[in-house]
Image (cartoon, rainbow, N blue to C red; front, side, top):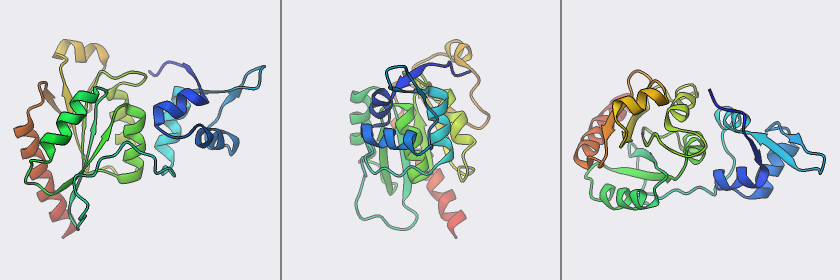
Length: 204
């Protein structure tokens, strides 16, 4: 269960990588429910923020996204990697650029940004860490699986946690693949190749 922790609009904006005014507008227009303190400050729960991400198609373009290639063509795989370690994201950017499977890579450094990108881009494959701040990977995966249009998305967990540690955190949904860290990039390239074939088949 997601604990009821209150966030200021500034903290929410930082987590989502959007402007403070964007979050304030979401609150003022009723897109996000919020409480107002005696001093007039807006306060949002994590649960409400996640609910907002799951229900709407985000309207912002200020994502931490890194396209792999600009010549986007039909059947190019859309790949999202969610990881709170900046160094790991940079390594992924380098390694993914060496893959032979045509794809566009989007990077998110927390689960909130990850869910924003899911709503915006509807990726074909999602790789995610589990141990992240504010909302963990299992919670994020559950929200993604409940979102419309994500039925054919492949979700892969990449974690340094062992099975016992994962069990304490929660239950990984059926069908989600778990890979160990250090990140097995050869295996990841194979997964992309398999998923690319499925996307082409569905598109055909």
